[in-house]
Length: 191
Image (cartoon, rainbow, N blue to C red; front, side, top):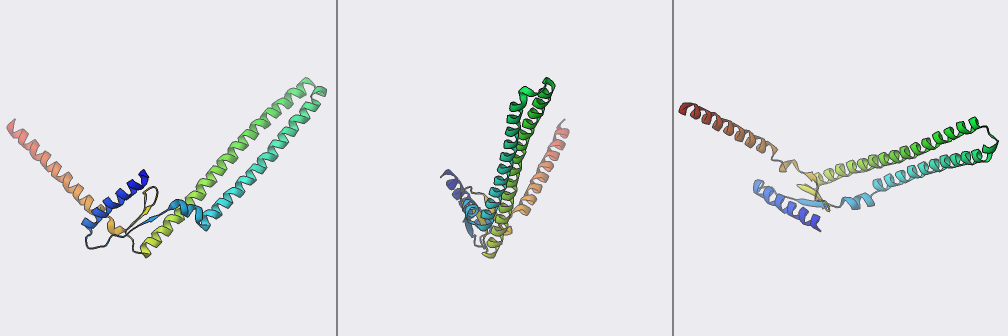
């Protein structure tokens, strides 16, 4: 609820500012629900299926690796009494290394899945932004805001006051420097 109030406040503030700066142009605002897009589009569903398949394959590989390790441990326990002390020590070291390798493999697969998830999310997000921008231009919108977060997804170039802000900042800087220079001359004259 608080986010919606912030988003509405932002919209109203920007609307007022834009209307005073661009009184001749009608300000057209729109909102989009990114969560709904992420849940209900073919690209997002394809990404989710791809990730699910990758996760299932990773889990199957881990299950297989884990079973091989357990079988190896059972075999060792069954043969242990017939093995020499040196052979037992070597096999215990080998089993310990295999267990560490298995843990490393689990971590790597988890990281790979996480990275894959982030890449898919980024790809869907990039496509989302591209499509929002295209639709906003097609509908001659001034601003598109994400419904829940209030994040601006698209802003028309017509809304940009960057150039006038740069000029104003440069003028302020020059005026400050000029005032400081005059103040410095006045101080020297009184000294």
